[in-house]
Image 1 (cartoon, one colour):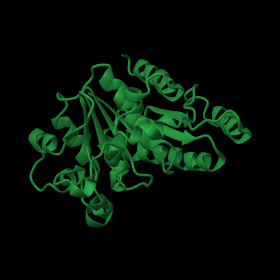
Image 2: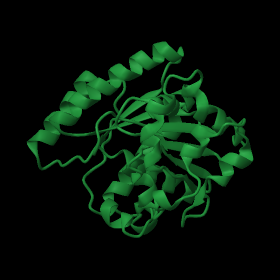
Image 3: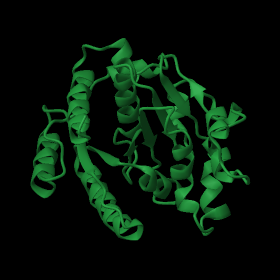
Image 4: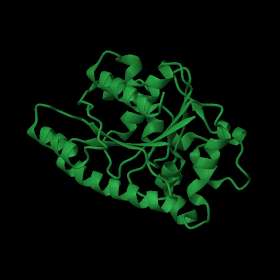
Length: 258
């Protein structure tokens, strides 16, 4: 089972779109895929039509479970999507209380890793959509993963957020004694604007060893697809945005030795 974490300490850069689209492409290729929503805002959950506050079980239950976690307990929290082989572990607003409730408890940063170990035989890929803040949830997502995907909008303020995220990965790497396999993915690229072109050029200069050589363009079909609770790759497979994610996926899988 391969575990990819999609993270950035700035909101609105395409984390959920990246998670959904890559997950959809993998499921359409015949893999069993689990998408995990670790953001209290629950954007990923709502994308798939899951009313987070109406769920009796969510990722919150995994964090607050008092007994040893088992595969059955994890699987009970999952919701199927409309795509064969694609499942969602939804979020809830209660996740926002975890840092206050249990952030200092020993072993709190490894809960998701242990839970995913229980279901390692159930899925081929797990993609974790992170909140835009460093806390228990992002620490868990980073501790559990094999690869970190950092979407960054091609505009100046998003680049400042990227600097912060890369510093966080450096600090977390030391804390966890773990080297992160990281790829920066330029998103929302609009070649008609000077700002986007300049931002892309700076990415290639400052992070040449880490940034993906392609880019995800602005594409309104991503927004349209969310209305139907389906990945854009299912509804609009020929659009330029989906085509860009297909190229990204090939790059990611090559990096995994697949």
